[in-house]
Image 1 (tube, each protein chain N blue to C red):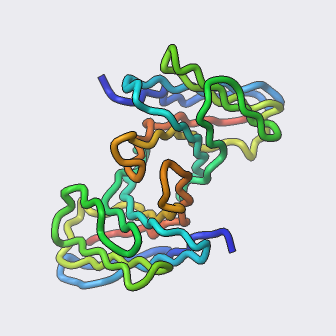
Image 2 (image 1 turned 90 degrees about the vertical axis):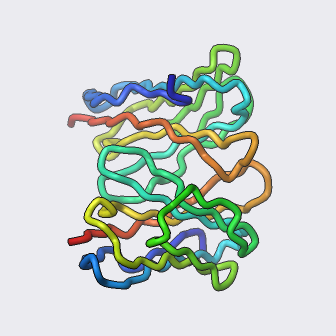
Length: 113
Length: 112
């Protein structure tokens, strides 16, 4: 299995809702990432988990809460989002040792009303 | 000056043309270079990964790195309409390879 899967594909939520995004990989990768991508812009790094521990938080607002239950799973919990948080949320994984390729999932398109 | 720059395009070429996509970077510490292809509303797909200066070929794609000029290129031979996408160059930070700096991307259209 050489892919990263993400659910749901699309999500519409109100500003008072709580929702979660899910990411899964079965490549034995030890690093997993959350990115945010706005239209016509490159991906922006949000969080990195390395060996199931949070290693990088790019000063992301606390309304985004990541969780790594095990080495194959990565969640992003969303609460009290703003309309400007609407974007494509991408998960990626890599071997996590040295400089190596990151493999991306298809993304979750989030709309905050 | 941005760390990684790309001409945003859009670049429009006829089917069968050779396409040249380019990135320049300012940080000489970058050692590894990646090219991603991203179709509209999809996740980026890794095309090429290279370390050394020189050329690396994979099918119709050739990645070229010139570290002395801080310049990388991706060439697409015999371009197809299915190559129409945004192409992103990317470079891991030497201080933390998990942090990848992406170029802004070049939008390519291959016209049948």
